[in-house]
Length: 281
Image 1 (cartoon, rainbow, N blue to C red):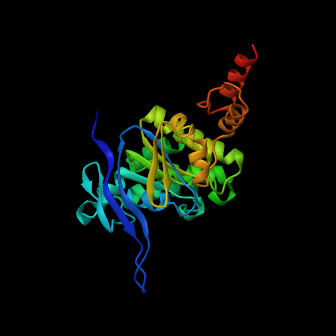
Image 2 (spheres, one colour):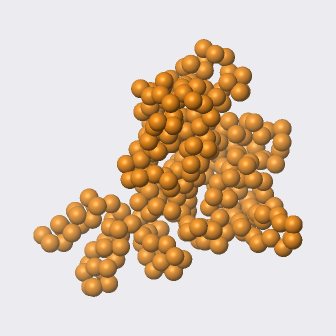
Image 3 (cartoon, helix red, strand yellow):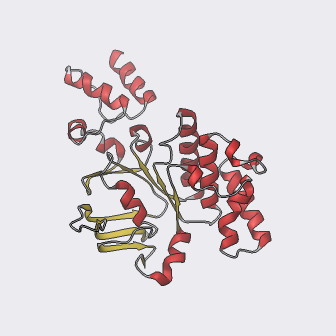
């Protein structure tokens, strides 16, 4: 197995306050994320998942323990630019990441600031916009786009830096169902076709179910880590933490509680329908 692109060792974090005695937000987290994987991090508000995401490209630095990006220690100031080239961040509100009045100029912003030659920037911008399906909007004004389109432009802006990993912190929280679908489809395409490592921070169960690996956080700790179909089998355990499960799993769980022998590892509607059809046959 290849070296992990992100690794934390006994990571602890506390926000400092003037009064002191700040609560622990991340509590002794040790995890590895392999290059090319698609990992979802799930948890209720206040679980620490967004704080963890901000450690992956040194927006926040550990209060204790270590975070490594491709072997680079995030507290090493001399490697900060290298770390942020490796790990691109996409946040909840795309308006906070869009800085130009024309889409293609916005996507070009980061490479320009990194001193990339003009002819190479043109290729990077065209490639990034095509990858996220926004190439025909290159000359549009970002403020006229839908929420999902804006978020895809924000992703393109990160892609133009050619990162090996993209960390998305609740990227669909402000979007309607169409926008959510657009963004998730884009993220999956980047992972499957480009081999980009994806870390998706979310509270949407259906989004988490589409990852290869699911990490569940609760009160600053990792409490579940595995394939989504395995994690979501623990319906009662997740509900005890204030989390629900995907609707197909919830339906199958209720049927099992009623004595019907159906599987609990069905994560989507099609799989649920197929299992019920087999049962009725």
